[in-house]
Length: 113
Length: 114
Image (cartoon, rainbow over the protein chains, first blue to last red):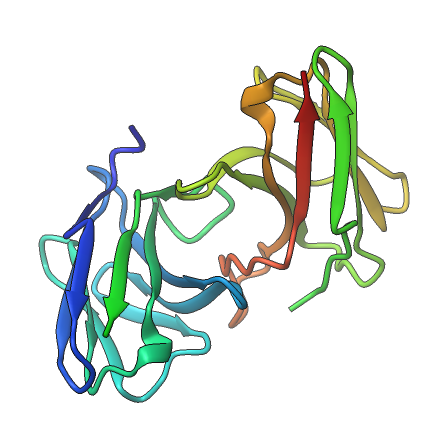
């Protein structure tokens, strides 16, 4: 158990809909990373937050947004969903910004039908 | 971001050592070398990291070339549970815009035969 909690574990929704994925980092960790993993793309970095502030952006679509709340949990919002958004979404938590290890959650499997 | 190159796949037999190579010829002086692995249907898991000196922990050893342009992850006795995708990643510690980023490449698929 990494200590990082992601909910829900599975999500099935229709095209055009909007969903929210939730990540609770390990206690004391300030940094949260979001990743998308689809079969043909590998692990794609989406966005990083540190202590409530956006720190780095990767290949995140404009239809996607995220935030980190004062209690440090984070949410990833995916809207106008397309079939190609079907993927595993992982979050990772890190104590700070430096080179300490990242702990990953078990992921949310999103299926868009 | 500095790039790493790994073989697409490698095979090993159970209880034998495994040496997973990684090339990072454009590494900067402030990049740390990290290794993660991802078991089937799970999130990635930290394995080890280092800067210049070789490192050992309970999971593996990391051997870093003197010029830092390559490194090798060593699993001393492979088990079936070590079958996973292994990722070699460079993490910037300089404090610039890429500070702390954790960007995954394609990794090496390790198959362990009984």
